[in-house]
Image 1 (cartoon, helix red, strand yellow):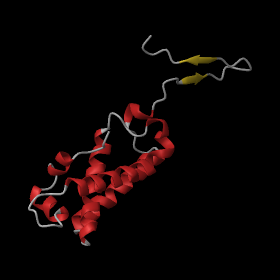
Image 2: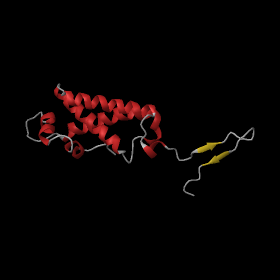
Image 3: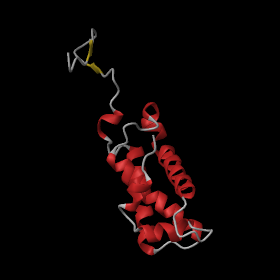
Image 4: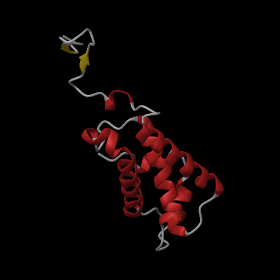
Length: 139
């Protein structure tokens, strides 16, 4: 499952800009293949940051909203890089996105239930006969 779609990008930038960033042949329409490659590159970057903390959950499905937003920012940045010019606004968005990915990787930002393992074990420290209890939430 893709972390974002062309429609998600179009919620952030105008179609005219998407055409400018991808229409190398002058057809007057955006190139969906180039956009998909930019999205895939963004997904790979996101997975690289999230690999250690969320390895068993990758690729994310369902995709957390924050991951979708970061993917949109990084994909648009990637498309601008194709043209050799990234505006100051998009440089800053990319930089903030990477900072957030680092915070996710370091555990400072949580993706909610995505990081909770199914078999949570709780240990008590009551003495030499420490007991181990399974979390029975939902039973």
